[in-house]
Image (cartoon, rainbow, N blue to C red):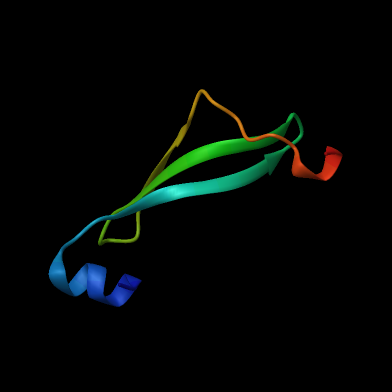
Length: 53
């Protein structure tokens, strides 16, 4: 499903993304609405820094 289908079918796309911040990596939920607006939620659990293993 892409953004155009989301808008045509009036559906929401959601998922998790990995964001790099000044403090390290953050596991973040993203909720994208059909109109293009979105919300994010920084999850409590974080990813391990795989570059340090």
